[in-house]
Length: 296
Image (tube, helix red, strand yellow):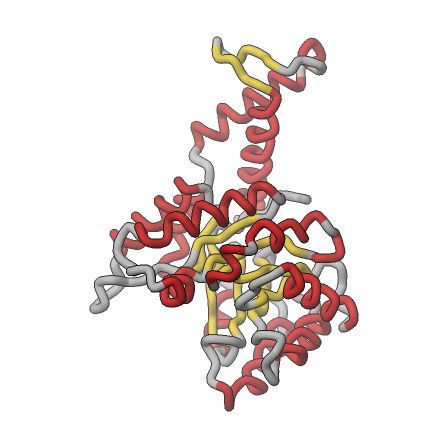
């Protein structure tokens, strides 16, 4: 699978046509048109029509376009999938995925709706059942028919349902976040951190947001869900590999590319011992840096 930058995923209400238009000029790697939490029941169908119209208008460039659908067992879920399939979006985001069957049923619905192969599946991890079923649920990514590419942490719902205290530093959620990252890495799935909970309340806490982005990056997240355009620049910078890391990765890749090292499992780079596993990690860093530059 080609490496794609997913540093920043900006969520927007499906009803907000002005936000959809403005997003065409923003530096977010992914745009999530939300038909679920951000839309009241009486406006669900109008929001779906608006999202389809916004996507049809084009102009989003290389940004991934994702529709967060309503749950499959609601009155709107299946129609959301059909509309997303017809629109040819990059992915649907499945809320409250709890078990492998949820992933495979959504993939089946996409296939039966005629969704092109490039329309992938993203899944929210936001319930205790999802945490308990992480291994079996993310294992479905090994089956190409699942279309599963990305999981997104729903940290606020997860905190509510586990009764964890959502406080600065997120101590009550760290075990769940780490388990989810381990499962994502085991099965080759990207993982995005949940949105920032603004503890300050009165105004956007820029310092707290930066700290949470850095925490997510250090844990191993690929990026973060966002709710404000003002969060994009900081998020992109934190989740991008730093220049010195890219330079080192290029040296590692070049060392293993030398004919004399073609069959070597260990080489020396500037006096440091580097294993073949490190070359694979370095190659991804280089590919990610190239993909980020292309997004510009």
